[in-house]
Image (cartoon, rainbow, N blue to C red; front, side, top):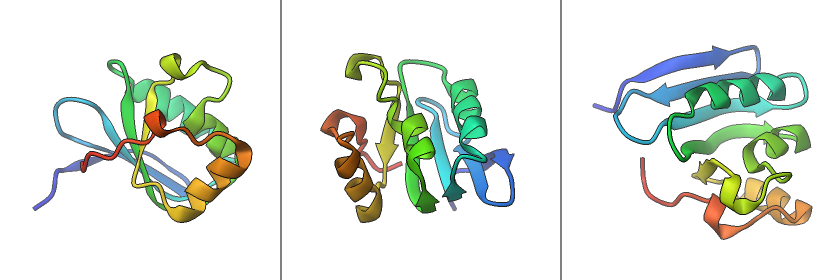
Length: 113
């Protein structure tokens, strides 16, 4: 039996859920992120922020474009101000992050949820 999840957002392409566990918010992204839903992703993640950071599981994403990567990586902010920690990053996502020059170890959260 897993931790109950709460649906935060859903459209035709993307589903955003949050684990109903105490502590650091743990958000799971499922589906596809592109320019049509990345503003809602940003808004939804911002509404989840309770403390220093939130953990975002990207393992169930089947597609993400640069607009979605910008939301998750926050390249305009210095690393010390970035409040999203990525978890379960796929090899495809790592490759895109490296190609964009945005892959940096502190943003990847390796602790199992």
